[in-house]
Length: 97
Image (cartoon, rainbow, N blue to C red; front, top):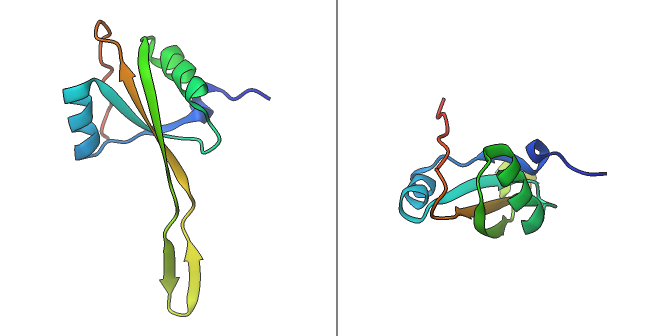
C-alpha cells in the first residue's frame, strides 16, 4: 500500500529554530510519519510544493515518560525531517495560524 504525500508529511514545524534554518540554509522542517524513509520524504516534498530537493536529513525523537500522580505513561516517538532545497528553487511560505 502506497502512502500519499499528506500521510508522509504530517505538518511543518514552525519554531524559532526551524524558521532560522529556513532563512539561513534554505531548509524546510517537517514532522513526518515514523516509518517514512528519505526517498519517500523527498518525493512528497517535490510533489506537494513543486520544488527540487537537494538533500534530506532525518532524526527520531523518543517519547518522554510522563507521570500523573501514580500513573505513568509516555508520549509517542516521532520523526523530524530537514529538507534542503536547491539554490534555484523558491521557498514556500507557511501560514502560522
